[in-house]
Length: 71
Figure 1 (tube, one colour):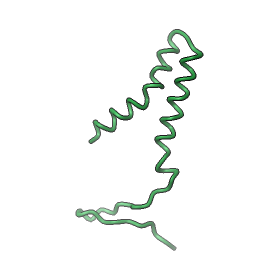
Figure 2: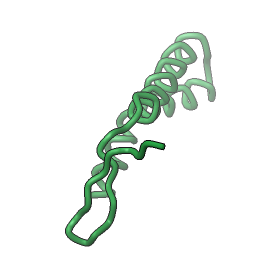
Figure 3: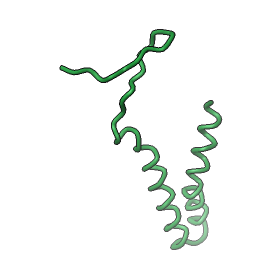
């Protein structure tokens, strides 16, 4: 049985050093899909649906803001 590579922090907490590609790119891929859906939806929809599509297009900006606030 093999264990994943990990290092220890000064507090003794284990931090994994290897991550799978799926885990690494899952959130960026989700952000990409949501923004592309929003772009296509904005081209095809009118009225209130345009506002909802604009929210999907804004997902990358919201993700950046959320990431900055978490620091």
